[in-house]
Length: 317
Image (cartoon, rainbow, N blue to C red; front, top):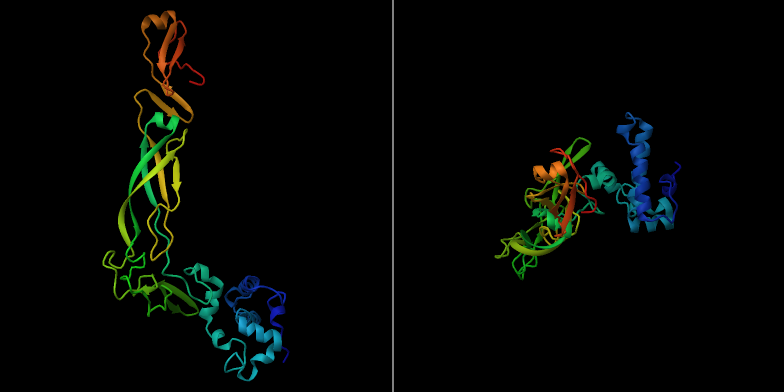
């Protein structure tokens, strides 16, 4: 029986790194997957051969042995274990093959089939800020008080009582998720024991009760730039809720709203104002003064015979 070279089968060079090998395997495995080829026996055979090759080359020790001795390295129980095929003990699980291809869509699996379920990013927060139209024109430094969560100081965010540590969840093995097999496919669900954290705490921290986070009111200074409009969003990176078990914090998003002005109404970069004019000025013409957002008085020329509702434009005011 002719044994195909694993590198040729995966269409990569012998010097290819692990990322290149993984990428090529995913592409080829998707192309010849039995479910995508109507149960074709040739496609199924190639799929198994590709998986066998990948199981060997993704393991540094197996790859080193294969580079030195070829297929002979796995005969007679060598490294592959038991049945003389490279990676046979792993290849027998189609769930692992499926996880190698679609791992990132099944909960962010890490190399080796494990994920850091105990490190999760904190939630983003939203703060609605109402400012005056004058502040939108000039810009302003605003002081905010935001109710959020911060890492517990006594336990440094671990959730465990100082002097102790969290233990890997026995139910999910620290992955944070458990698998339920449905025929060929595998469905991953949040672990019911650790609720997706991947760790269990036997002796929780009394300050945070094992959560690793405590409620806190945070004071922030925010620079509202000149020219902001209704609905402008300002992002403060890392000012959201603290991450779970030492995970990175979320962000704070500030949504700007403009308070109603007694004189002006804004539409984009244009200001509209209703200005009462006496009958004499409307009939004969004249000049009136209007206050501007720049705190200066602006002279507005009123042409003779102007009608009610007529719009006059003052550039740059």
